[in-house]
Length: 401
Image (cartoon, rainbow, N blue to C red; front, side, top):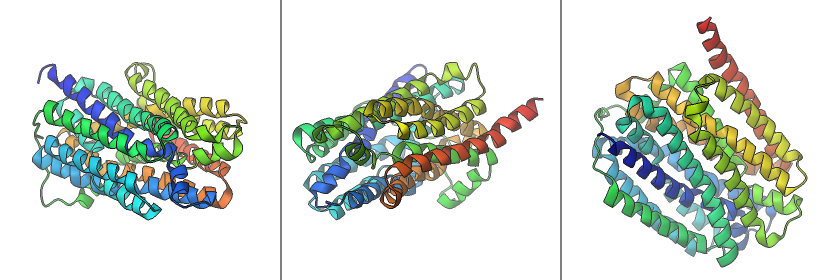
């Protein structure tokens, strides 16, 4: 495919940014929009925000293997066009909702057709030269993070300037542009190794999770997704109640904080090629996991919005190393002919972190207060760092000796 493979990589990264903005952009104003829809109790708004935020990645996790299989059978271009078209329609419809239940139904539909991330990973494995896979994985992860950060920033700015319904129109239009990009610029790729039509999704997931290294690395991606999205639904309410800020600009401030964390995360993902020349991949994941746990505690201890933003940005930097390195190690742990379909199977497990993060955070916030979310997330990262050290770092060092 000569040098044209890079053009396709850049295209799917741009599409990923647009899709991420569309799905995640509501986080900076969602609790406030729910209050406008009739939820006046802050605790109830936090819980509903967690549910509405978490249900979309939940459906993505459940549907991702199905869309990966369809992309394997029909080609990624047709499947991604259908996904983006449906997403464009359902996101636009959110602007007309009158109750939290209506918003919830539309977010469910968005999740049902939202399984395009593993399709992008499969395309990378299909077209990228072996020695360039870590670079491509890092770039794709950076694009996912940029979607996560530009979304809340854009959503917060538009919501503060034009009202809480306007961002849905903006996100719908952006998805339409991504759809046109796929239609005009994406070639009709076909995967070399087709999935056996009689092989079930459950059997695929079980077969990959039987590999100990894959099992641990998928758990790390789950945790990273949990940490990124879990704090989102309660962050606007936490800042509004405990920080000295103007209520009119809470959504914008949240967007800026999320933007800063994501920007640093993207920088880390892009720099993975250089970092792996100095440290082993297991060492990098261990250090990053332990650092993120410490930084969540520091975020809670900050008395000002600036301190919270700075330490969240540093935490985002360390998070940026986890997923692309885990994906690279997963691709090396499975047979070459299975790499194209492995991500659709295991990503559904990892994506559950996006589900449980907002939901559990909303429940914890309602029961124990907003600050408890920081401590619970930090504890989980500390436990994970111990597992990484024991199962990856020590095993590699013992085998080397």
